[in-house]
Length: 125
Image (tube, rainbow, N blue to C red; front, side, top):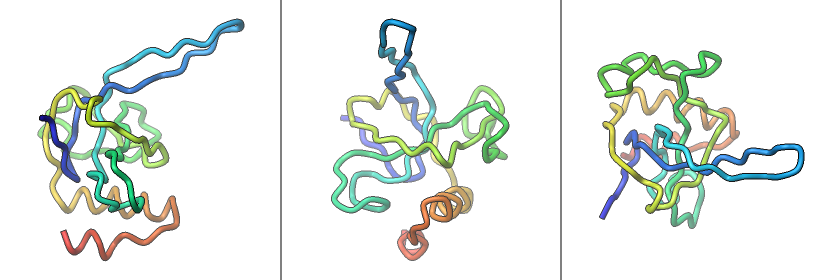
């Protein structure tokens, strides 16, 4: 059984909604995601699914300095404002695990963006 942990980078199957003029389609795409909650309420209380942040090649977002060492194929960035729910069945393959220092940076930015305080929970990890 696949199990993700906080700080893991996983290849995940994500639904993507495509709107045409007349119809709406849902395609599934494989995306890299940084797992920030393992279903134990780290970010959102009483959550049973994983929460992740999309990883992108769009340079408008927060850069992952060691993207190559983490096993990502291109220069990569974390989309802080794109928090997504991930079910266990969407997990495809673990890519790597981010070190705690880098994870702390992204979680600190997320907490500032969402205006929540999880820093004490991070320190207890």
